[in-house]
Length: 228
Ligand SMILES: Nc1nc2c(ncn2[C@@H]2O[C@H](COP(=O)(O)OP(=O)(O)O)[C@@H](O)[C@H]2O)c(=O)[nH]1
Ligand SMILES: [Mg+2]
Image (cartoon, rainbow, N blue to C red; front, side):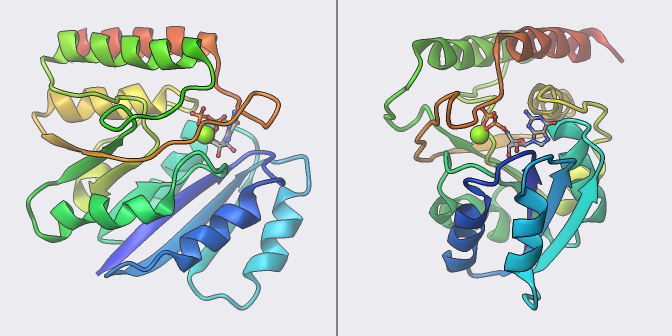
């Protein structure tokens, strides 16, 4: 069995090699395919990655024009060859060690989709506004889709291959998270949640999501709730 880890990268030269090394070191009961999609970085990310992955078989690297996180992740979904598919941001907010428990229910055929929830475990929020924003977006998801869910926006979403390949995602930006969640729930696919650790980064450190993405997320959740 193989796990494809899609890594969208936009100007992450400070953290990208560290996260790749952490992914490599993580021991999993499946083979790993790490697909790095450089989303038109203008810093040294691409050169650094290219040098780092030289002669390493588990990697794939593509450089494309900048189009947003969603555009990069969608491309990853398309070319992924793994039986299980997931996403890893190019920062150090999430911890690859958590993949062990996240892929387990899929390997054991007990789930089709698993989300790592940052809110089932205590973490120290850096900014109250992100914490509350995330809680609010999850709350709206619960109401609109009658779903038991605690973390809609999590980056650690793990899918059985066929489920995500058949979802037909449109979003090009951060709205990919609510779109995936909305479409899964509308299809009646159960999302299993497992607690994960989270250590948020500051805006100075490169955090790029902001309040406008929050508004777009609300719009996206409403749109797919009422659209056929
Ligand atoms: N902001 C932004 N991020 C992108 C883009 N393309 C790929 N990414 C990647 O998407 C991931 C999410 O970024 P981040 O700011 O940490 O968002 P957050 O973790 O959701 O708060 C990072 O790995 C980025 O490098 C893009 O066009 N814009
Ligand atoms: Mg991040």
